[in-house]
Image 1: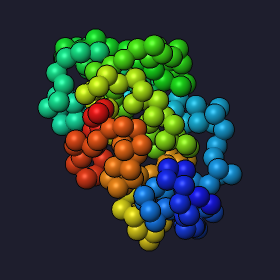
Image 2: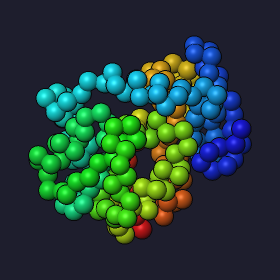
Image 3: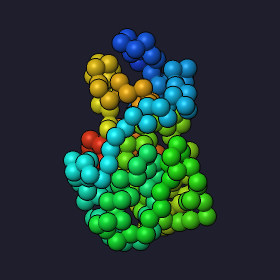
Length: 213
């Protein structure tokens, strides 16, 4: 199996608990689920329909505000912003519209499928807990970069894997059947170059910001 990000050979990582094959790239460190184990579009939607997050959940709102404070506001405080993968209830957009000075759009494959970003360029694109759900993420990263203005930023949240097969076999993050793609900072640095971007912020755990060159 070749890596979906860099095209190099991968090594097999077998998940005994769920009897699923994963593949880890030793070049860029991308780790991904075997396509044969992926659930259907409708099954994926059913999982997302169980999520119960709202703007009344202060802990959830605080998570978003921390994300914005670290990944967005040090670089952009106003302009046009797209939330890519806004979820069943676009809480992040609600928080931004309420507390910050951005003009906003949002898109979600399941819940807001109108491609409002087409023909548009943004100062900021945000995406929280989305890219781990995408089976072939590089084209999506490139699509997002295409819709950034020069100097625009893409800020996103996804938990990094530790590039350790033993740790992965016990890692709680992989237990969500919709989590199918996993990254390290090395993976994301490779992706950023492929997208004509640069990494300008990482907390080395789950938060990352790209800037369009």
